[in-house]
Length: 88
Image 1 (cartoon, rainbow, N blue to C red):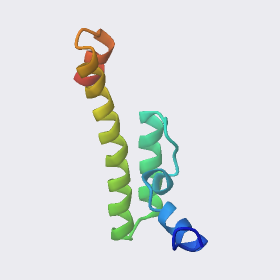
Image 2 (cartoon, rainbow, N blue to C red):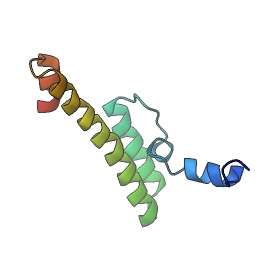
Image 3 (tube, helix red, strand yellow):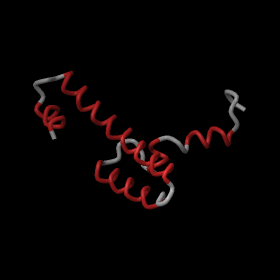
């Protein structure tokens, strides 16, 4: 037992990450993220608690990306690609 958690407890906690809920990895395209969300919603049909987790996981990815785009503009307000990314 490392850090007071059993392997099963660590696995259960890992399953609650946005990537595990949607079955995607960091760097997934937005279109793939949308497809993963749709699939996860279908798999969770009828389970309101799981549907809430799916939506939470999706928002985590979207909000992280949004913040990354905003940070890029803050770093270089004259960067056309960065400004365009935030404005779309």
